[in-house]
Image 1: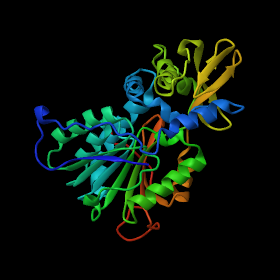
Image 2 (image 1 turned 120 degrees about the horizontal axis):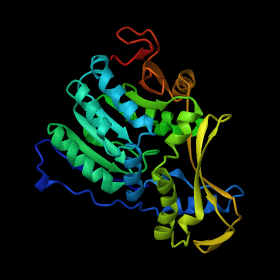
Image 3 (image 1 turned 60 degrees about the vertical axis):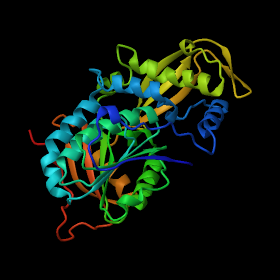
Image 4 (image 1 turned 135 degrees about the horizontal axis):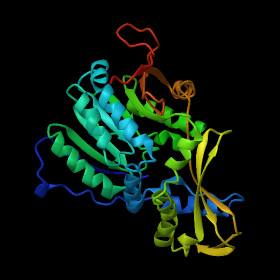
Length: 352
């Protein structure tokens, strides 16, 4: 997979001089279309969740994060603000922050403001336009930082810039995006980040917790229909980029809680029998037939810590909100519990 880098060196950047992130195209081809076709031809139809995050999808998701029903974003932001002073003392100065799935970088701004003399920020995201706008805003807020944007699929980036080779690194993975991976995928991802970030690295991960489905389901099926539009936008994207002929309004957005798997599932359910053309194939849908579009696993604290350990990380600190809706985990690479100078695993409420 090819990647595109944009570096903004130290020094103040005015809005009139704002650099532009050119759109990155995978030189190996649009593999996600092949994944989409394979999923739609499967006995139980599915689409890769990465299709959700084109530029329109990213804008719709930003709207979702501001909805009353969607508690994860505001809860995590409040946690990051309250835990900042403690986190700044726990972590060493001079870190390079590597954010996976950078998006709007609102949370990165809070994190960077909590750290002692951070040296660099690398944001990894697949949506170039969103990354462009936020990277410039971040540079205006932190003009002394070395800032780089990596336009790529954050799940498996191929490398990190040479400028941070000698810096201690803090991975940052907010938003409970790790919940979009099944447990085996999450373990594999944690292992890859452990190897890429290095033996002296840290990792700060936001993790949504198991809770009453009466709270969970509305967060993924809001009253304004924004999440429904976000889900159907996958079909709009396939029409545009894969020359398909989906009628998005012929599919109903459904969010349901799967208690056995401990996950919210998003589906697009065909309202009627229909045939859709896509990449030279005729795909038949029965009335009521579902396309499984996304999972969002909800973890227990102990369950996520087990995943982290399986991926090569040691849990160090944990913060939760008073209602135990959401958690933020600080992990450390390659250090056993009780080593001098390190903080043992603990559970702390964010200070009020």
